[in-house]
Image 1: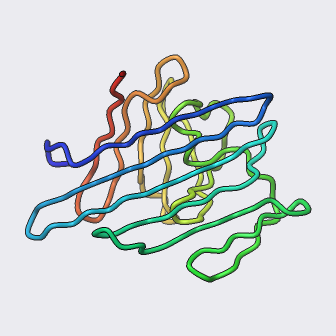
Image 2: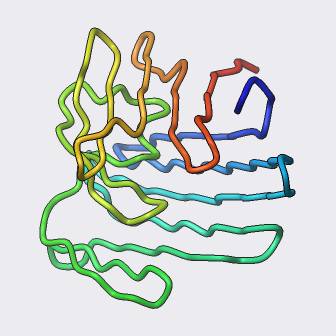
Image 3: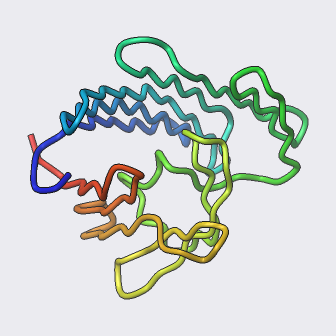
Length: 168
């Protein structure tokens, strides 16, 4: 953010017999006019390409700030976000955690686990995709090589965040 390294994202994906489990932990620390630390702990499970469940915990300055849990039940998703319950009567085949290892070639929409929202995702050039908000403004841009995310720009209130892949 603004040329400074503000955090890390560690993400792991396993695929056993068509069941994909993605775990992601993001930690961001910003020191501008104030100190701000946010941590996301996410887990998403797919079975044969269909989202089965997801869980997200958000911590601000070390304290649990919000939670989102969702589960596929009888063809619909029950979502509980900070105590509020919502139902989605649609099959979800692509979500935010899939962005890291699975280029969204055929995806038209994406479920964003962190805020429990559906967004449109579309290609803007070869191996480059954008997500727009409800006012059709670009929110995020993703760049892929060989199906794996290499670079992303994410727009936040405090400024744009650049995400770059680092190979271990």
